[in-house]
Amino acid sequence: MTYKLIAFDGDDTLWHNEPLFRDAHIRLREMLSHYGDADTVNDRLYQAELANLSIYGYGITGFTLSMIETAIELSDKKISAAEIHELAEIGKSMLRAPTRLIEGAEDVLRHYAAHPDRKVVLITKGDLIAQQLKIERSGLESLFAGVEIVSEKDPLTYRNIFGRYGVEPSEAVMIGNSLKSDILPVLACGGSAIHIPYEITWVHEMVDQTEIDNDHFVTVESIAEVPESIEKLEEDLPAYGTVGSMENV
Amino acid sequence: MTYKLIAFDGDDTLWHNEPLFRDAHIRLREMLSHYGDADTVNDRLYQAELANLSIYGYGITGFTLSMIETAIELSDKKISAAEIHELAEIGKSMLRAPTRLIEGAEDVLRHYAAHPDRKVVLITKGDLIAQQLKIERSGLESLFAGVEIVSEKDPLTYRNIFGRYGVEPSEAVMIGNSLKSDILPVLACGGSAIHIPYEITWVHEMVDQTEIDNDHFVTVESIAEVPESIEKLEEDLPAYGTVGSMENV
Image 1 (tube, each protein chain N blue to C red):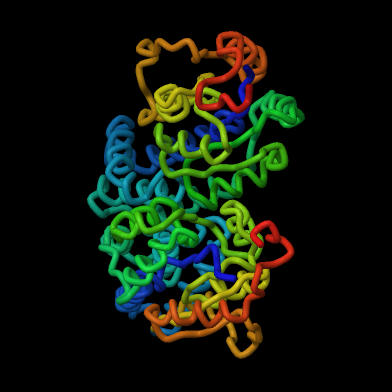
Image 2: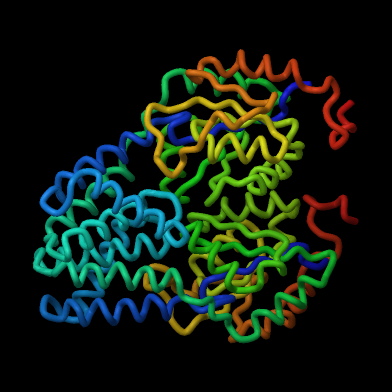
């Protein structure tokens, strides 16, 4: 059997994203250096992000508001309007930043987009409009059979998406940089997954990889290795699909 | 023929939304009264919202950032961190506000949810997470066959959504308070539409209603009139559907 659906994460899998956040962190730490050391600023920002996640979601507008909140609270309301304005402008420049593709990503997408019996889908998490802008700027939009922007990546999210494309989880493979969002929930619902670690991982997305013991999971160093990994994973799939897709025999 | 898909807008159609924004506007005008009169504050806020729409999208996080930007710029950076903090807290309380249903909305949804040959779908615009929270809090989620959260409501958006549910535009009717977002684009792609004006309309959503001349369009005063309007609109539909759905004859 071959995978009928090949799904890719966007941020830090197909294009660079964390460096934008890292640069914003650096500027915030400089701005707040009178009020707290680097660890304190990092910790307060992370606590604000966590506390706000359920109402702001994942994305740059929410991150910007969390930076502003951190600056106001850590400075005990002494931060100036000019400095808050600068934080808001940092958020805007993040939203307007060009989409920098990860090397090799376009080749891999083109390879699978040409296969008539494979559907290539983007599954990405974050602000609706910000993700759409990134996809448009990436120049890759035409290579996807579908684009799914979700607020949370859990097993039910993946199961529903796979269902909408008419495939069983066992017929799908997800490729991404986040064990927490791209790998574990897909394995949990019976799919396959390929992990490509990125140079930076947001602390919220960190999990202990040593716990993963699954035949349908592999880690590679770069996206260029994905086609070879998919071939290897497919060797371990049942020859004629699962009970759920016997009509394909 | 009867409509196979009955689509509802959420904000100010099924639940109250604009009053939250109106209250935030009132507080912003009070806060900035030293720096500009009510019209000036309104105008500057609207200009900021318009300029930021392409990166922030429609939603409360973007609105909060536009309020903060307006306060900083109109005060020539004299506004205090404490006041900016208050604006951020207003945004949070808007995001946390309970979903107040519009009278009669639940009855109409229950009426159609019980029809096996009608699909009831929510089509709403805004922040992904904020809209999901509102839907969860509404208690109406189980009455929808599907929920579609989109970044923009244009004819192509509607055409794609109808397609995903396997219906032609001519087999769908959309019900909403915004002529610009809920009515005109649906009529433009060949669907039917029912307009229920809300007590407040955001200036960005205002259009001149006198221009609409379409047999598949009606305006009603309250959502309770929707079932009767749908019956009347259905009398004007071709008896056996359009060419595009002849398989249903």
